[in-house]
Image (cartoon, rainbow, N blue to C red; front, side, top):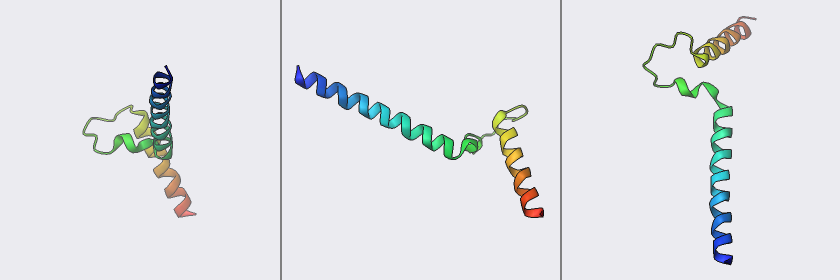
Length: 63
């Protein structure tokens, strides 16, 4: 019985660790999903976000 509980805790801890890692990694660079994308990005929310970031960088560099 103790072995089953220990195994369950290990599995849940690993799953939680993976979920936290992926969430943090996504939040650090949300436009990473566009890298290597060969599709038409018309209306893609990631493409819009990327465009906004580029515009803000240009405004900041221009001032």
